[in-house]
Image 1 (tube, one colour):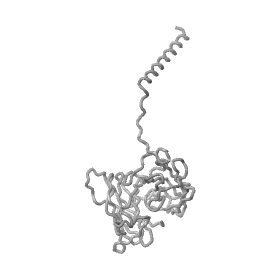
Image 2 (image 1 turned 120 degrees about the vertical axis):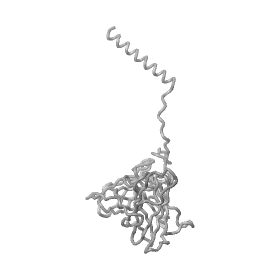
Image 3 (image 1 turned 90 degrees about the vertical axis):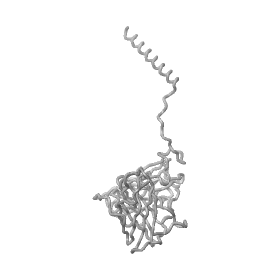
Image 4 (image 1 turned 180 degrees about the vertical axis):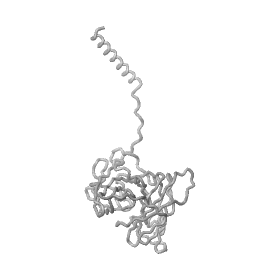
Length: 318
């Protein structure tokens, strides 16, 4: 067989093979696509990256700069150390525009947390939003190092909160510090705070802080942002952010203004956590910080009542 006839025979055979495959495909239908998880949709119509967490859900937030279609954009990610600075940022909606409609939570549209990677510096700030969706807040960056900025908010179109996180860098001579470990009693500006309760992986637990001054219980704490205390819990290592909600509220007829402030929290995993408690008395907000270790996940309802921890941080203006 000459070369031309060989080429003709090969082409005819190839066409026959494609025709057979086409017929088989029509007979049995296309192969099913791999199953995909259901994607929730926001009110803007864009698919969310994952379902919104419910209150009390022990998933952590703040590890992503974008979630459920929303994104955090810092105007600058490098700031000077050892002094005051101004933070400026926007939250972008799923359509890419600056978000301007929020659902207030604890009297604020957005709570801004700034913490260094060593978890020795913590600030709870309340920025101001301009009409164009730009937020600004004065902050004090005490030392050089790497920081994490957390925006805790609920868009008006959503029912569940979001916590987005972004890295912030303070240039200078960085001296890493070990995670503070001191116990369950700390002192801040003459106030003594004692922590009872534990963080248990995968199971909600009660955290109770008792406030005393000069050996006497403080029974007239000021309401601060619709609560007698606000607690932020950050996981050491990756700074995973836990949503923690106070038990009760001022004016509900059941919650006393001290000396005890209660919360319910669930650890997402074993490990070390930093607990930052804001409380107000005499018109001044103070912050106490504890280090608490969550043990292995419980397989039975029984759980230990106590665990190591504790430390305080310098006050910041709120």
